[in-house]
Length: 297
Image (tube, rainbow, N blue to C red):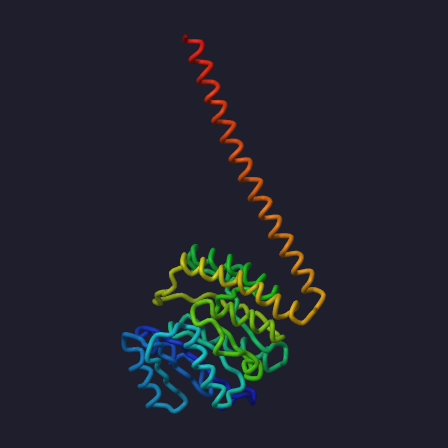
């Protein structure tokens, strides 16, 4: 069964999702041709439940990692299987039932119509983030800004949203084995896609939260991902502009160099003011103390 004459594959990365994986798999529309469940060495019954679906229906394919590799590597495993099977459009739907399947056509249609090669759900549209915890919302907004800078996709929001669809030809342009293996996978996908000239579009999709439990430690994730984006920005500028001798690369280079010098001068000036201020304050206190001693004598 094809959707508008296109073979559709869905990759379902899962780690310890025994409470929600069955509900997730049962919710996927019938027009999907193949469903790839990739279990990232779960310690619960995720793999067993997934295998039950595979035995009951050949449209399900279950793969299990022998050791935990991270969400990025889990998705890549599914991508490779889907490409090998000739899927033409490949979607990612997490195994925690957060991604509402009724929006699948909204992700697929822009690709079929030639408006985009890579579509991503967007929960950061006002009114669409209802139910998102304040810390999670703050983190998403912060990483949204940083990812715009790092990736160059200024029109794309909600980079951490893993509800995405790509056509197979665009996916083949990416070196899947070099993509980030952890939670910054989505950010890395955007950065590498821009370098390859892949056309990307946002699709407004409301946040959906229920019984799932996030496995992300947000403070550590924010710091680690921010550092990754800082490095990736310079990698993209080098790869996309400077290495290819494009004039804009020189502007980026001198702009960044000027920014670095400015930050150093600001730091040095602030340090000098603080040190001099403390010295003057200390000298003033010493002088005042001596004057008081002389008066007492």
